[in-house]
Amino acid sequence: DLAQHAAATSCWAAINGSVYDLTEWINTHPGGPQRIIALCGTDATAAFNAQHSGQAQPADQLTQFRIGTFG
Image (tube, rainbow, N blue to C red):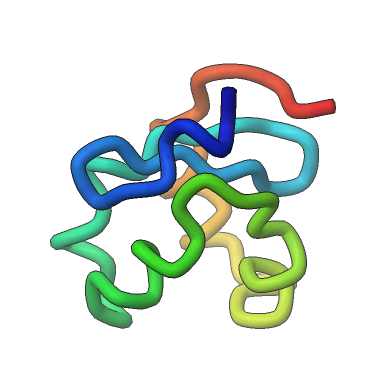
């Protein structure tokens, strides 16, 4: 299911065992839309943790987009 949402118009990503619908976040992401679009349809755990490990704000923002579990 995750791989079917690999576009800016329907962007899901798995991060740390949860699935997030990031479609609405793409154009508001502070790092720019391309950072999110590159993660659509993938397990983005490594990319997210490399960029945001230990930061509370990105993790808190992410929770509002959670739609399920991955695995």
